[in-house]
Length: 63
Length: 454
Image (tube, chains in turn purple, red):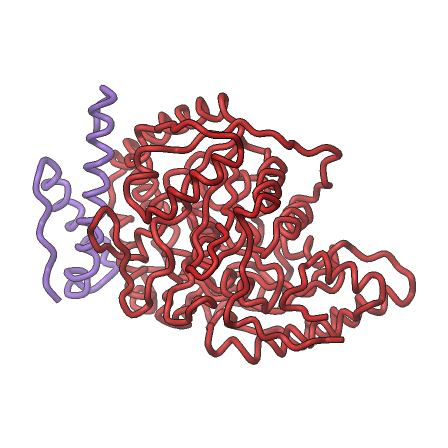
């Protein structure tokens, strides 16, 4: 299965950190993780970007 | 007399009056399940022995002149996440197959039984309720009674398919982000997400406790109202509201989906004398916030089990849960800020209007083989996106009733009626008015084949 594209933008560092966290949790074999979990991390990043943009528009600071 | 078209209240009245026996009704429903379940895959367990025993007990009480409840002899079934005494609560997960059997019924099940309803079995769901499709790697996909090549929706898909096919008149499901409302829309049923915290959750396998509710599916408003009152341990109000100040939710809710949904909202609005469009500008962000919070807390709930049994999960569920665990706390905190503001906006709208209207799903039931729906001209996963319109509203905790549009010759599509916390009775009154106006109501499916019982 093709690996999903790494997300771009300001959150890419945290994406890498989250991938590292998945590995550190040791819940799943890394080969399995590369296909399924990364796809979901990309999806979560997409949703967080929407949240962060809305917070910025509200004048509140995304952490 | 046939039970596929009889309502729960009609069955209850016939049994109480001695015009039908609870055991005959139960046998008819069991026969219907035997005939139809292979095509639908709605039931994962049929509790025929205990059902016959309970039905006989109801008949015996009636014969002795003892009091029985309003649902005497009415068959019902429950999503596979309710505790039922002497059954394993699987929650759609094969890895729970070695868990001990429940030692008592969930309070909600106990209340249904106390009202005389006869429990017939467990209903299929997405594993651990994580999905909008009822595509389950272990128990298979539930099929839509209107077209068995299509999804029933989820995660309470078995509950919707069983009620829509007329196998039982009442089923119970759960709704965290839309898991009652989505399958109700796709299967043409009335489906209620009650006020968060209003119905007992003990003995219900959790998903995201901040959002979890249980709720009934039925083919009529009256059955839904009665089921809710039984579950909530309340009585019918002495007076019902007959006039409503209504608004249509605009923006996000009118942009992404099937134009028939907007037309349905407009028809309902017109029947109430018109309704302005009200936009909640943070809806898209609230949907994303709910997505993040569900991932995080859903994941945390499973963290310990994942350590030892990760590969026994449905892969699609496992991967979502693990990604959620890895989500940082700061992102979850930001999501909560959005939800806080969105709830204020929604409360402002509900301070001005009695009812808000929005489509329930962005499309009718998609084909199982495709598993995709079209949103804004793009094909996206049905499993993740059928809750596009239900998920943002879930964070508010308000009661929401999905009503089926009357659509002769077309696949079902539901509309959400939204009101203030604790005002479920207003939802029932509004839905009754819409049924009287001919805009809303259940239509027979292709799989209603229950034999005559008398």
